[in-house]
Amino acid sequence: MSNDNQNSAAQESVLLSTFYCGRKRFKLYFHRNQIVWDYAKPPYAQHSVSIEDVISVQYKCVSTGPGNDVAYDPYYFIIHYAEQKKPNVWRYNSLTLRHCDALQVSSWVKTLQNHLQKFCKRPKRLLLFVNPVGGKRRAMHIYERYAKPLFHIAGIDVSVIVSQRQNQIRDFLIHHNLDMFDSIACVGGDGTVSEVFNGLVMRECRLHGIDPDEAVAQLPRPSMPIGIIPAGSTDTIIYCLHGTTDVTTAVMNIILGDSLGLDLVSVHDDTRLLRLYASILSYGYLGDIAHNSESFRWMGPSRYEYCGFKNIMANKGYNGEISILCDEDNIEQAKCCGRCDQCTSQQNGVSGGKKVDRWKTVRGKFFMINAANISCACIRSPYGIAPYCHLGDGYLHLVLVRHTSLINNLRILSRYAKRTYTTDDLPFIEVHRAKEITFHANDAVRSHWNCDGEVQHQSDIHARVHCQLINVFTRGSTMAVDDESNNKCNFCRFCKI
Ligand SMILES: Nc1ncnc2c1ncn2[C@@H]1O[C@H](COP(=O)(O)OP(=O)(O)OP(=O)(O)O)[C@@H](O)[C@H]1O
Image 1: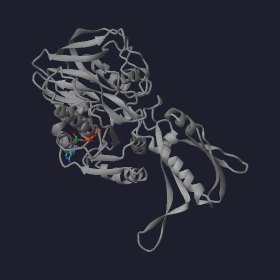
Image 2: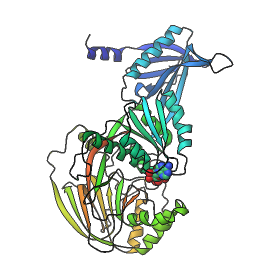
Image 3: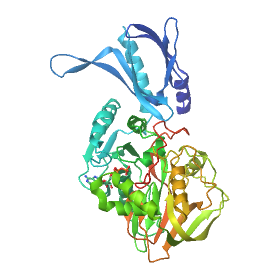
Image 4: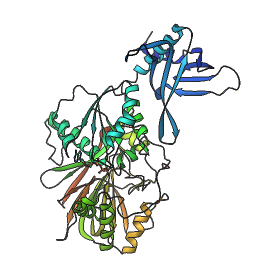
C-alpha cells in the first residue's frame, strides 16, 4: 500500500471503546483525527478534542513504595490536551480513563502516540533563556510555575540559561554550538526577544560568511523556531502574535509546534548594522522618552510616565527628510492574525505580482516618526500604532505624525488607547507601506531613535524589511481583542516598544 493510501486508511479507521472516567462510563472513539467522548447513558454530553491539540498521551503513574519509585498503571491512561477557553486563550486540560482490559488501554495509547509522532515540528530539545530583571522580575517564577510543568508533560527536554547581563543572550547565540537543540525560547519582554532574534540572525551570518554591516546584504534565515514566554513590561511582540499576553497560551503555542514567519527590520547607519528590530523604530516623541528616561532609572517603570508627560508638554518637533521605498497600494483596513492571505502568500513564495515599488520623499517637521514592523498592539493599546501592519508581508508601516498643537498630540495618544481606533480623520498623520526607508535630520536639534526600546544615538539611518526572516511559534490569533486590554490612557504607553 502506498504512503498516501496508508495515511488515508489511518484517517478512516475508527477506534471505539468504553472507558471509565472516575465512576462514569464513557464511550470513547477516535476518528478523522478527533478524539470524541460521551456518556455511555443519557444524558449525553459529547466532548471532542482534535489530535492537533493533544499535548501527550501517557499511562497513569502510580507510586510503588515509600521512596520516589513510580510505575505505570496498565489500566489507566491520560490524554493531556490544550483547550481554547475564549478567543486567543489556551488552557491545559486532561482526561484520565480506565479500562479493565490492559490491552485496550495499550492499543489506545499506542495509536494516539503514533499519531502524535507525526507532528515532527514540535520542539523536543529546547534551549530556554530567562531574563531575571525584565518586567516585574518574575521571569523565573513564571517559568517554574507555568512553563516547566507543561514542558514536562509534553516530554520536552529543556535546558535553562539565566542571563547575567544585557546582551549575554545575543552573544551566547552567536558563538555557542546549538547542535543539540531543535528550538530556542525565552522568558522575558521585548528586549529579551530582540536579543534572541539578533543573536540568531548574527549567528547565521557568521556561519554563512555574510557581512551584516552591508546594507544590501540578504540576511540568512535561522532554521530554528523561537518561542516567547512573556515576562516583560509591555510584551508587544507576543501580544501581536497571539492576541494576548497570557503565559499558558504562550507555552501551549510552543508545545504544539505551529510556527509562522515574522518580518524583521535591519537598521543601519552609514557604516554598520545597528540592530534588527521586530516591533518599532521611533524618532521624536517616543525616541525622546526612551533617551530621557535613562537618567531616571531609579524611578522604576514610572520613569516612562514622568518623561512622557514632560515630553508631551514640551511638544518638540524635528525637521527631517524621509525617503520611502513603497508600493502604490492603499493600506487595506484588515487586521493581520498571522494566517492572513498576505502573509501566507509570502510564506509560499507568491509575491504580490504586479506591485511596483518606488522611492518617494517626505520632508517636514515631525512630532514623531514610527516605523512599525507589527501593529504594536499591547494590553493598553489593543490596536497599536499601526493596526493594519502584517506580521510577515515584507512591509513596515511608516506612521508620520507632523508637528502640530499640544491638543492634537493629546488627541493622538487618546486615540491609540481606544478600542475603536482610527486616525483617518487626523490630517497631520500619514501612513505609508514601505520596504525600505532612510531618514536624514535637517536640523542641528535632533532626537534619538528608539529601536525596540533601546536608544540609538545616530539620527541618520537606513532601515530595510527582511520578509519572514525569523520563525516564531504561534498558531496566530483571532481578530478579537483580548479582554485584558483596557482603555486607560497614559502618556508613555509606547515608550518601550
Ligand atoms: N541579567 C541582566 N541584567 C541586566 N539586564 C539584563 C539582564 N538580562 C537581560 N537584560 C536586559 O534587560 C533589558 C530589559 O528586558 P526586557 O525587555 O525583557 O524587559 P522589559 O523592558 O521590562 O519588557 P518590555 O521590553 O516588554 O517592555 C533587555 O534589554 C535585556 O537585554
